[in-house]
Length: 364
Image (cartoon, rainbow, N blue to C red; front, top):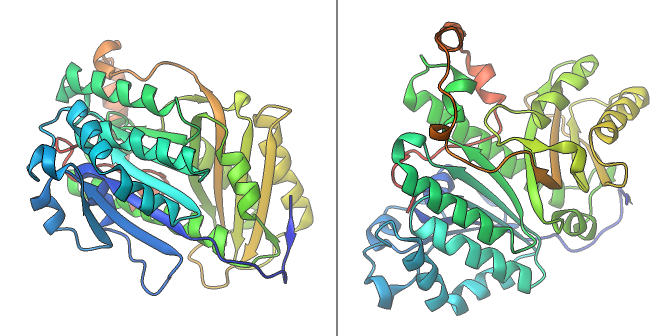
C-alpha cells in the first residue's frame, strides 16, 4: 500500500475536463501555472461559449451535428455530439493517467456527453472521477429527470461519481448569503480539491499514494464522497475528518458500504503517531470492514492550515435515489427561521468541498 519517500518514478498526468457550460465555468477558476502534470480541457457543443474559456484547450464536439450552436438542452444531442467526436475525446483521455470530469447535469451537453467520456476512460483503463452538480428544483422536473438519466448512465461505468445537489446550498450556507459570494467560495473549494488531488499524486511525501493504489480504489463503481477538511491544531484532527466526510452539500451516501477509501494528510509540522492512528482508525470504523484503505501523509510547510485532510470514499451505495426537493415535504417555518438565523463567515463557507455553476440555468 505504501511507497516510502525517496523512491522515484514517472509523475502521473491528470487531465481535468470541463464538460458543458457548468464544467467549463469551473475550469476557468483553476490556475495550473507551470505544473505540467495538469492538462485542462474545455469540452462543449457551444462554440461561442468556448471562445470565452481562458484556461486550457478548447474542444468543440459535434460540429457537424450542432454547427457549434449548442445541444439545445437535449441530452440525446449531447450524447450524439460526443459520439461524433469520439476519436478526439479518446485521444485526450488516452494521454492522461487520471481523468477528472467536472460537469453540471440536467442540461444537454453535460448530461449527454459526460457518460460518453466516462465510458471512454473505462475502456482505456484510466481511473476517472466525475464531479457533478444537480439542478435546482426550481429549474423544473424535466431537468431533474435528465440529471437522473445521466447518473444512471454513469453508473454503467467504473467511474467514481460525486454529486452536489444545488438545492442543498441554502441549507448549507443559509438563506441570507449573497449569491455571488456562495458561488465564489464554493468554486474555490473545487479548486482546492483538484489541487490537493494533483498534489497527492505528484508530490513526494513520507507515505505516498501511488497510481496503482489510486486506480484500484477509483475503480469501485458507485457513489463516492470527495471532501476536504482542515484544522489549525492537530488535537482537532477529528473535526477536520468530519468536515471532509460529512458535508451538507453532498448527496446522502451510506459510508458503511464504501469499498475503497483514500486519505491524504498534509501538515505544516509533523503530527503525533497517536493522532495518526486515531485518524485512520476513525476512517475504518465508518466504512465496510472489507474496504481497501490507502493512506498518505506529507509535510507542506507553506500551507494555510496546520493540518489538511483529503478523503475520497468510493463504491458506496446511494442512501436514497437522487431526486428533486420538489418531491419532498417543504421545510417548516421553524426550519426556515433556523437557516436564516445562521451566521455565515468566510471560513465556514470554505469548509464546504463543492462547487456550483456560476449560471445555474446554463448546464449545457
